[in-house]
Image: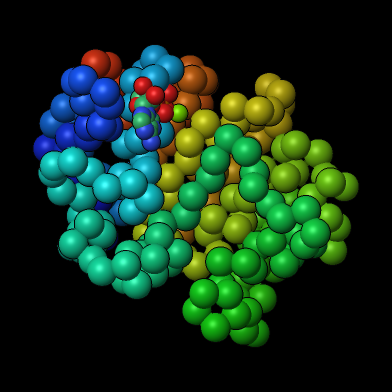
Length: 226
Ligand code: ADP
Ligand code: MG
């Protein structure tokens, strides 16, 4: 089953004196096609939680399972593959490579598994059409607006058909109109591809668009009433 299960996750960062405890027994479960927002004050551990789920930062204790696989039980090679193929990341900054075209940027995640094929180029073309950038495929990121760059980042996140999309403040740098547009595309693509979507956001508007909402506070995750 394409399910995300997070079970009793804790995270401590070493510090002089007492370790910094960021997550204290966080659990959640989401099925394919489900989307959720995680809100909470700055410094409450939202980015840390996404990093652990996405295979970027190890937990101190607890389990993550995506479609039955725990990234933190994998060796380095399989973990890298997990990050590259099972998870699509969208950050507040687009992290597009300035020297590459939009099309090349979207195809970048395919390089780890042999580079672009006719299929992946067709998929990139479809995704760029979906996000309204078909006519901008040969442009460099610097020639795009902030909203367009973030839309290219969405297409890149989805190129390898991930089971899970993790978005950390995806609209945080955008004006209201572009933010709304990116939020709608994020949900549209999530439905189209039947992925699991977890969005960390300060935006009440974006959080309210999701099916479920959790709040992270003092290291604990609590589901908010629908
Ligand atoms: P949020 O995304 O909710 O703003 P973060 O997950 O970025 O919060 O950070 C939560 C806490 O963990 C903060 O106090 C931050 O300083 C600390 N932190 C995050 N990453 C590290 C790290 N690599 N080393 C030490 N402390 C960290
Ligand atoms: Mg953060």
